[in-house]
Image (tube, rainbow, N blue to C red):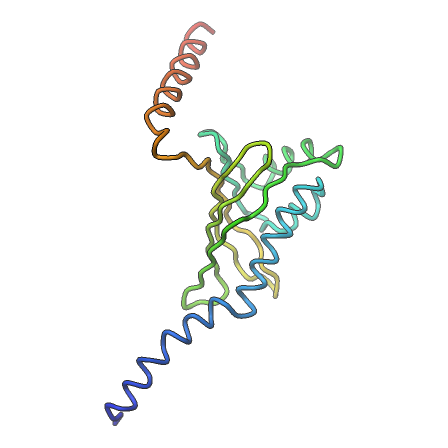
Length: 170
């Protein structure tokens, strides 16, 4: 039977164990994969970029229709975008990585910065496959300041009305 002193020690140690899990080698490895994923895009290296994705991964873009399974849609898009060795350049400026009880699954969120387009948010899930972390799901979204919310809603409504009007005349 545990004494109250042993229980207190265990209760104090548990948060340290959880923090250590999120700052250990898996945390660093996931961070390196995400950094290299973004670097491969910046230099237009499609094989290295796509190599960070699982075979059944999905990339969610910023437009409502942009749900890209790796095969064939996202591969075709990346191949055409990177054909001249130029991709897109997003740098992570803030990142949180978490692990659950299963240490072979990580989920993350990050704030990305692009010199041409500003700030975005990336979120996703990675799984450890044969000793290598791979991106299963990545979703990118625009960051909208709360002060701009009404303006963005009106702009979106206006754009949708134009699209619907164009579709009805076809």
